[in-house]
Length: 297
Image 1 (cartoon, one colour):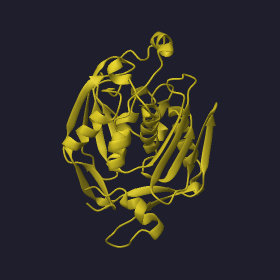
Image 2 (cartoon, rainbow, N blue to C red; image 1 turned 180 degrees about the horizontal axis):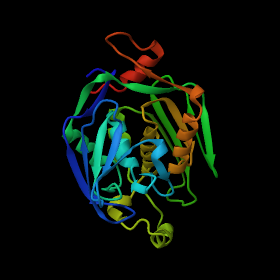
Image 3 (tube, one colour; image 1 turned 135 degrees about the horizontal axis):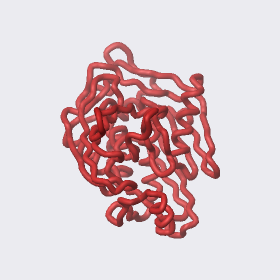
Image 4 (tube, rainbow, N blue to C red; image 1 turned 60 degrees about the vertical axis):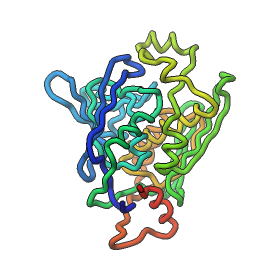
């Protein structure tokens, strides 16, 4: 499969579970999409007709406990980050994500079920160039004591995240890696959602975490920070293209991730959209390794 070509899914694959915040049962089906479609959520089960929302930074309407996509009429899909991370991490460019409830199913709290669904559906190349956002100048953002920066990077897409919790079980952790489908599957894809028991009453009273359980939130060793990387990969793909950049963050969250994307898009001089067609031209030598990270065997 040519690294320069866009990809989509060969067939459909379905997963079913409950929403971690709503506690409602939901079925999600991944399927093929046309060239340049990106990731399109199709919300079914609504009165009237199905509604579509494109997975972009501009469609994010809430980030307090999860990434929520919607339109002028309100929220359509919550907790979108794990399935988006799986698609991005496995090298898929275009896909439909049909969902019959308000929230993506939490499954075991990681992206593993979505990776399995992608494996079941299969990935195929498409007759169009893959495009990347190559970051040219650093863009930074701060939310409270959280800080993040997207920087130029010559070797693909790298994530370095540090977390710092007062809870001694978690404490301070850091982790970094260069993204490729193989490393995503091995190091990040199975990292699960986590939460603190002290926050449970507050979350429940606010109508959140109704579907959380020890089956989808228990974590070990550095799984805490690796799950933060998983969230960041999903959130940052809402820029619309794979990034050729490095993302460095301290105490990251959905709000910080989305704010960084909006800052990046607000400064067009800080990036350029590039594509490489192996049939007509080769990427510059310093980007060749970066693009080849997306070779799919």
